[in-house]
Image 1: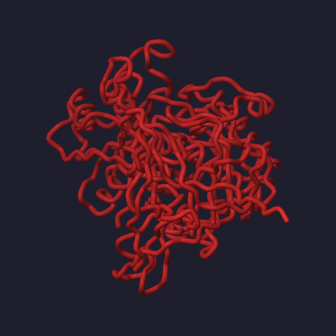
Image 2: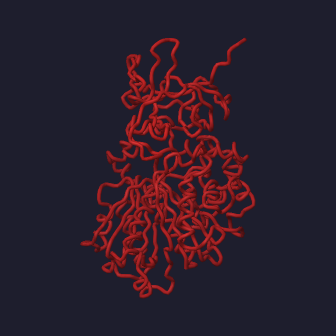
Image 3: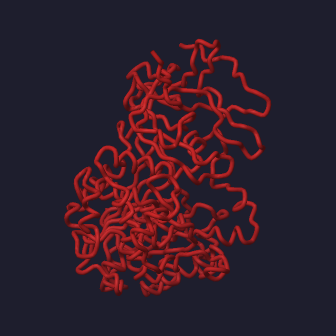
Length: 394
Length: 151
């Protein structure tokens, strides 16, 4: 397989584009802004793009084509990916395969989501709750009534029971990620919060309080991929997409335990092996922190610390600036926001900027190797339906 | 092959969550039991039932009734849910007696939110899970604490 590079990365600010918090904008406007930012970052003309891939959960059909028509890109293969909260990284995975296997030399990958506009304009699709499966088709969702937070709370509770992890340790993750978000002009939340505020916020599913849940968000992100020859023409700072592995939850993958996500552990090992690095080599990591419990478990699934030591890892600040590796420098889903289809692409935007040393006050010193951890939807059992691990090097 | 067909005993305004997931008791002495699949090749039990085996290449599956006894492995108290659900409510993962790897997500009924514990003994019951958009009560399986016999 040929080497694949990210030569440009851009995104909109994440937030609610509902005409109140942020101006009223639709998904195509947000997608366009992200594409223009990525093209500009790469310094590449729009007519040089040979293929397009778009991750999205809730838009009407052909999201990629509708976005690209505004910016003069047409007559190329364009693919739309729905894979829950991992839709963006799923789109990226197929673009990576196409460049790596010599099918295309350049590709644009877009992640976009905007529910606020659809709700504000009275769209039947947004208002009907189409995103939820009908009763009787997914038993676990029917039973929980609050599927995401309940499953992540059950995982957190199992971790507390098996390893003595405390509710304070989970809550510290929200404090860290919102502190990072406050330094990120693209983040939905721009304000630091205290441990007391996190712990005293409304309980959703114990041990998860409101400030330990990611918000509802709109936004878009885009990256430009290229082979080595094209990358050399456009940038002196090409970032290598050294591995991008995707899988789905394995049946009974946790083998009787909810305190780990075996699917992430399995594919992160594959990714490390294919690049020839280990978790100790990582400088910056973006994880799928939709709830604090998932970030803590991710420390262990990714091998950043030993199984059961996630609580100590956050207590000692080893996942923060000045520690062993900076996790969620962008603010993560908790602080930057979580527009479903955009999230997986935005993780790679942040890592590209970090490795190019363009992150201003949240820059991780000497960032050379980054990892993205993105999960989405419902699989066979209690692990995500789609899981992606990507490793970037410079 | 176990006979899974049984009278569903639903009242006016009630609907079953899904056919073929729980066997209703046919007499007061019987207890409700979940219906799992059993791979005739490797013996893997799956709930909800699978048509082909998820553990091996087995293609012959039987239905099997699970023991109605289990232990609470992990739980949470849900305090915010989509419309139609009673909050606060307990949602747990229950490990059934015969298979440590068979984990059932279920609501815990007839138990105070302060009283639920990991390791607590529970039993399968038929219960109302939520009210659907048509205002019907959706009936399915749940668990409740095992009543301690008074000696």
